[in-house]
Length: 254
Image 1 (spheres, rainbow, N blue to C red):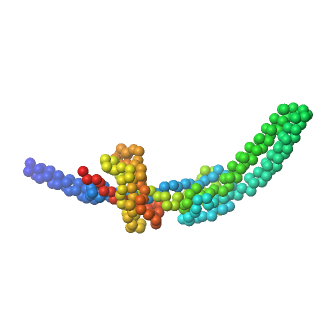
Image 2: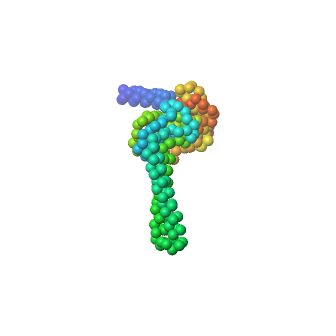
Image 3: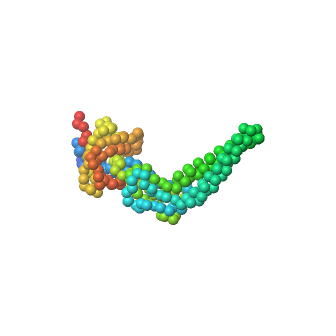
């Protein structure tokens, strides 16, 4: 019996020691006054640029890592055939316009019936609709930057023809960054929108002030965690998307 009791006590001691080590080593359970947790910097806005035009790329002015300004041309396609087709349609529309105007004049003198006027009007409307359709297509021959940003990935090159819907380049918005972190759901008892914390970026070693912007809509039932998105409160110049770091929260006392 004594031997069994000693083994039982030793087992309890090992279990207690293991829990103590876990509490000491686990960053989420460390110091309740300063709770560090890992976070990743993500761009607030990003996009994969693609097209439905089966035309050869004639211009890709920016390469990976380069900056661009809002309105700059990011991709330009060879649309000579569309321009030529539009000239043809414009000439046809002019003929239909003249025919319609002539028929209206003849109608006033009862030289033709209303049906002939309506037919010429319909042909003119169709020609104008075709021009508008082509103008939409021509408008896609150049893709302009929706915001100031940088090229994250260049997937195709000049003189290549993209597949419909396949990305040509990937872009991210400059200066618009957020921090994404996963926190224990138990923090919801004190964590709220606007809660401030410090974020130390691994790559630069610099600490920035930040605050919670959005708290996720649902708790992960398995890990009992929830995603939090935060914004930089201080100047985050030099911080790039993809960098990571440690978020230090101060849990309210009491």
